[in-house]
Length: 423
Ligand code: ADP
Image (cartoon, rainbow, N blue to C red):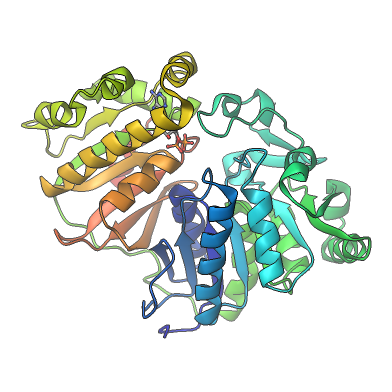
């Protein structure tokens, strides 16, 4: 049984997304916990917002549906009447899914016939206008996301992106309607439902739009989006919840520091280059992995004697041309898997060797590392940059402080400055 009634249950399709959304609820004064994978029966959680972190973004759609429904059943069993499906603010998906299939399945399980798709996250410069997603000043298809190793996004129009992924009809709610306010959005959703639409891509340009959308749809059992709409939901929910002063206090244990980077995003490439200016780094060579070289032992030997308060960097991060060349030679999935396995083996050995504070860059990479460490729960601490909080994981060696950074997040100095917000 839960220690308290869960106000909102979230299902996140990757681990950095889970920490990102949980941090939104923590900032609103709600006690927030992240559970890794579908919790086992008997798991006790004492929080207002519970986020189940899955790694379902790029797996087979049927498996993504199965795991998401298991998480949904668990959350409902613990009393969560409001559900939120959290995906990336750049709508990371492929033609097969998994945003569409998971949304369809969750709606069916909740006996509901309509929800919105709202990836806008204005705090991180993701806005949606006339159903087109913008990353900063450029449309999604012109952003670095067009080169993503696993989910290249080459169309900015989300109605077109979502349509092939869902069995439901996709409608759109333009900003003209959102800016009219709560009643107008309610009227739009009632009409879309009546006309047989199952999902509506909804525009949002700023936080006020997100509050309007959350308020308008506050009776719906399911909302879907990135952390931006969760911000709106938190603003609505916090009115009925006692604020917790300890909402973002976490356990920290002194130890060595490391950065593990498997993201190849534009932002992460810049962060890695910045760190290498005055820190040492070990680059994982995908060809060496493919040829069976013991790259993990090489990295650990390199790190010996270097681990300490000054963080070391182990990275596979590469520019798009290099990633494409690796994928052409070794296959997209195999290249990704080899890198994720190597980085997570290294992270595990680091923790066993005394690393207690670690930044992991990349959603898939973070998922692999957290799983390799055998972590089951993350408590949410202070935010470092929009969308990236420190989290604390109970572990046999004592608590580990982790910053799980989604590829596109954080300023250029993130790997250098994040440590300051731990103390
Ligand atoms: P992001 O948050 O930027 O999307 P992810 O970790 O989710 O980062 O995805 C990056 C993927 O690219 C991972 O599967 C990772 O293993 C893979 N990858 C990392 N470095 C390379 C590389 N040099 N060549 C090919 N694939 C790589």
